[in-house]
Image (cartoon, rainbow, N blue to C red):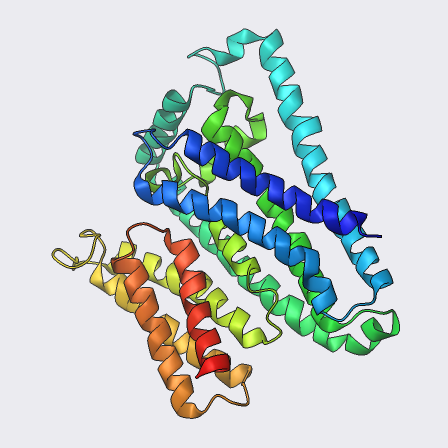
Length: 358
């Protein structure tokens, strides 16, 4: 049966087309910077490309037709469950509620549904209570760390039960990718839906979403666009077809550890700024150096833990240097694409070039 495979991919294609459509529709919105506009086009195409990869990937993983049908059916259950939860039990009831109670849209409502007033209130709360800002930063860093844990767990656990998986018609690679797709798109569909609603029909956000955004949204960079987890996960999933785990773990380390290190060091110890270098004069030199060093060390250690037979020590060092340089470019010079895309894609390109072509 091809139906579940097609439905899974169709869901991702629909989301991709919606993201592109609304991005183009809002292209002349002066509140959105060009970096966000171009990046959202990339998110849309990443959804479409991920849908295309998903359509074929379990065949590439050497599963028979019956096992593929089973996996695609399970994924469809995951996808449709989160969509039903969002639309049937949250967004549609919210629309009905505000239609019955128009006072919920007023300026003095307990939960503001007027975007500018809502963001102003959240901004004031962060200014009054700096600890909330710290808690938000910590929670965002922990979320990135959780992604790293899931990526490593998915690989290691499925390898450890390889024989059991084979006995039921599966294999470690297919099960690893199933874990990645089910967990990542559980969050991606939820985040993407909430962000599309927030940026286009703010008043339809459920109460829990309004409360969640007030505690997690980075107002400087995410107020009028998608939260950073969306491009990060979308980009990372594009690497799922690679059997070689090192190609996956290196971009993950750069995105999770190096980016966090740069942010933490920059905010707490950054005293010197890139005043005349790059596109971000307020970026701290200390933070960028921390990100570059952790990119180099993370890449080097990744090859120590997950070695590749055709990669020599010299190549290992060179790859680590190039990945560190890629982080520097992204952090200091990237002007048209968000760092959560480039911190995945650039290291991945470097890895693929060295592993397969150099």
